[in-house]
Image (cartoon, rainbow, N blue to C red; front, side, top):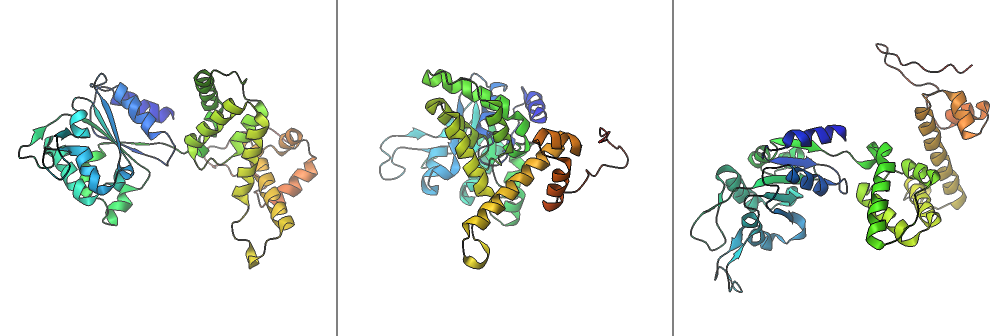
Length: 322
């Protein structure tokens, strides 16, 4: 995230098209707003449009507006989001969902800064700072003929990749604390800080919903005021990740699935402990309160490497085990 922050700082004052890529829930809109606050038009509007949220038949009128009488029901002229963003920032969320016909019209806007309302006879000129976001690989979309290559070249002058939460687990305590303070003030409650045990449980979870999922979890904690409920929910989700949806043989054995889930969860905990302790197995055994012999057995049983593989050109120093 420091790399992301440095990129945002370099963008300050440079109103070039920005493409933000990342999974759903990683905070693409939050990042877009942060870029806007550092842009030349920071005091001008920040206009967002979520492409898949609006039917394709209506999206053109939402983007570009229409003139009076352009179609049935158009009793008055209406400016589109592009006009409303003049001088500021236009944020297109999930641009991969943009209809091919609209992609062509949008490309014209990026090329010469001009567009026309639906039913309009004259071109209008606008200046907008464009930020686009997507959870798809646009190169793949181009190869599949679902996205224009020339449009991709126009919108990705500057690209920022947002990592999923599972790749930045060390940030969870700070993120959770920020959300806790935010929602405590919003709901006028004082639930108290999250315990170290709950934070450790959070850092062992996979977070398929990313920061949006963490946001919802902390909000429920603030409202309910119970760590037990949140902890149970996290454990249930973690177990759901390690239990197969379709057991082999088509039959469900509760005992077998429970054992399988417990083994997988145990394997993840041991692997995390090994990584946190520099792969020193005696330190890990003490931290997990099990014998050294038991740890070696569990490492072998879980199919984990007995020792960490280190690059030969720059070996890391590992504390002695004896």
